[in-house]
Image 1 (cartoon, rainbow, N blue to C red):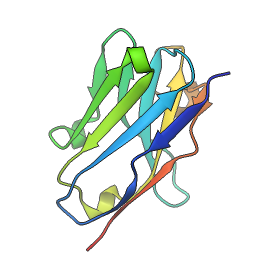
Image 2 (cartoon, helix red, strand yellow; image 1 turned 180 degrees about the horizontal axis):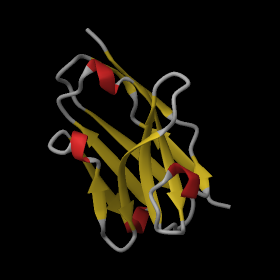
Image 3 (tube, one colour; image 1 turned 60 degrees about the vertical axis):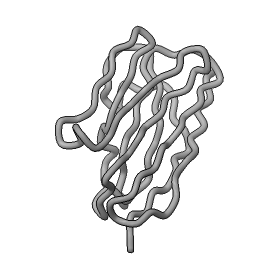
Image 4 (cartoon, helix red, strand yellow; image 1 turned 30 degrees about the vertical axis):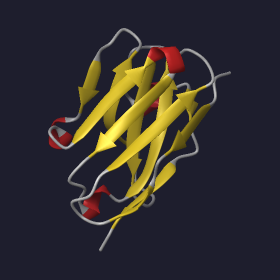
Length: 118
C-alpha cells in the first residue's frame, strides 16, 4: 500500500503562483495531478512517470509544469498565472499501469484546496 500526501494549496490572487507537492511512501510508476471542482469528475492536469516522461494537458501548457524527484518519490506541480477557474481540489494519484486515466490510479491522496480569488 502506497500513501500519497499532498501539500501546497491555499488562497492566491489571480495571476499568482503556487507549487503543489505530492510525496509517496513508496515507489510508483505514474504520479499524476487531477483537478476537481464541486461534484464534477476529476480531470487530469499533468502526469509524470518514473522513467522521466511528463505530460501536461494541452489547455494548461505554458502555465503549469510537472516535475518529479524519484529519489524522494515526490512530484511537483508548478502553477503560474493562476485564474479563478483553476480553483478546486487538486488530487494526487498514483498508478502502475501507465495510463493517466483517473480510473487507472491505484492510490489517491486526500487532496489540497486551491482557491484563486481577489
